[in-house]
Every structure is written in structure tokens, then in C-alpha cells.
Image (cartoon, rainbow, N blue to C red; front, side, top):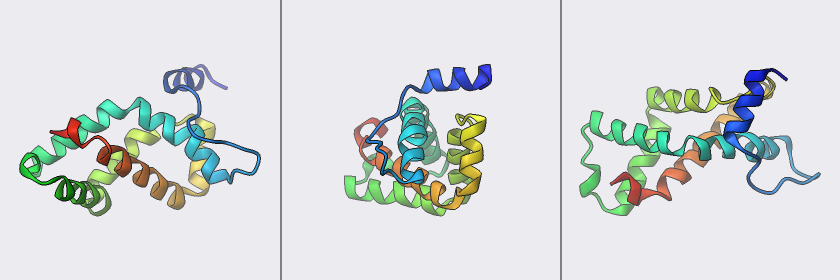
Length: 129
């Protein structure tokens, strides 16, 4: 393992969530890689989303919580450019071995990444105001 990979793993911290011998590879990747990255990058994700709302001229602050959640869903699921920026922020924290795992099943892992990120942003609505 390279020095860079060791540094990345140290920055992220350990696995989050339950990992057992019965865990599927995607679930293991989610808990060992994706969740720690999302946690480590949380403040940056919040800042990037706030900037997105401003750049798109969305009156986010005056919306109801339900409408805000819809905006989060639409921004991440329908705006390809924004989604790709978020994916890059996550992939940039992969080790080489994790990237090799990712490219073998990128479609399913991308869905997991975006769903986890959507839920993370929705759970922090008060920090987005």
C-alpha cells in the first residue's frame, strides 16, 4: 500500500456500519469506503450544495422542509453535471485498490453513493439554511 493510500485511510477513519462475514461486497464497500468518505467530506458537501442553490438561483431558504428535500433529490439525481462533481469528490478519496473495486461495479456503487449523499443532506436541512 502506498504512502498516499495510508494517508487517505488515516484521514477518513475506520468503517462505519455493520460489516459481517455475510456482508455482500457492495455493502462492505459502502461501509468501509463510502460512509467514511461521506462523513469526512461532510462540511464540503454542505458548502457545495449551498453554492449550487445560489448558482441555480433556487429560493431554498424560503421553502418548506418537504420542498427542500425534493430540491435535494432533483439536484443530485437529475443534474448530471452536479452529480458528477459530487462523485468526483468521493472518488478522489479512494485508494487505488478501492478504485479498482469501484470500476468493477461502478453503476451500482454510484447509486449507493448518491443515495447515501441524498440522505446525508436531507438529515442536515437545518445546516443548509
